[in-house]
Length: 288
Ligand code: PAF
Image (cartoon, rainbow, N blue to C red; front, side, top):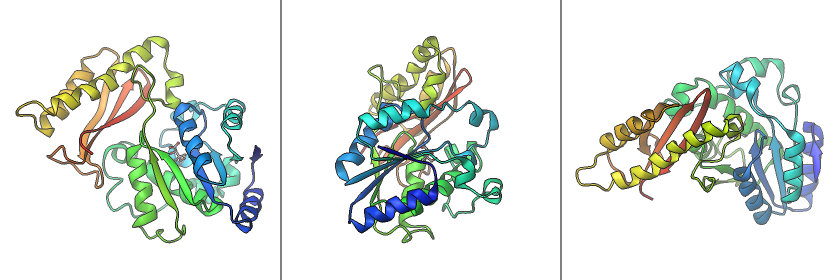
C-alpha cells in the first residue's frame, strides 16, 4: 500500500491505472477509521482492480471550528487498518494541498435542488457545500469507476447521487457509479461513527437509547392508527426522556426527495442527537 500526499503524484498514479485499463474504486473518508469504513473498503477492494482511500478531514464542511479541531485524527492507525484490508493507495493531503486560500475561504456554490434545505443542511449551513466541493474534487482527481459511501450519512448520499446524476456536474464523472452501503452497528445496536471515540463508556451506554428507539419505532409504525406524525413525535419524546440525550431533529422523509412524507412507504427516519457534547446521527428505513 502506498500513501500519497500530493495531487500531482495521485494524478500520475491514476493515469498509469487508466493506461493499464484497471478499474478504480474510491472510498472517501475523513479518517479515524472504524469497521463501517472497513466494510466500504473491503467492498471497493473486491469490486475493482485498484482501491483508493482518501483520508482528509475537510475543513470546508465544518461550520463549527471547535468540531473541526476536535475531530479525531490518527493517520498511523488508519494506514495500518487500510493495509490489512487490502487498500492499494491512500490519499492523505493537507488542506493547503487540496485548496487554494480563496477556495478555503469561499463557499462552494452548487444547486442542491433543495436537498440541502432540510435536516443536516438546515442545522449545519454550508456543510454540504463543503462536502460537494471535496467529493467532486476527489472524483476529478481519482476518476473512479465506483465510489463508496455509508448510508449512515443518508442525506450526504442522496446529495452525492444528485451531484452525479442530475446536477450541472452530472456527466463530468463518466460512468461513475455511487454505491451506498448499509450502516454498520456494534452488537449493541450503536451505529459506528468516528465521533463515538469521543464518548465515555457511560455515554456509550446512554447512546444505545438512540438505535433502540429507532428499532422500536418500526413496531410503532405498524400499530393500529399509527401515523408518520405520531411515530415521529414518539421517537423524539422517547429519546429526550433518556437522561443525557437531546434530540436536535427527527424527521421521517421520503428516501429520494428527503421531503416530509405522510406515508411509511419508501420512508426513512433521520435523527441527530446530542449525547453530552457529542453530536450523533443515525437513521432507520421504514419500508423498502
Ligand atoms: O462522510 C464523510 O466522511 C465525509 O463527509 C466525506 C464524504 C469523506 C467528505 O469529506
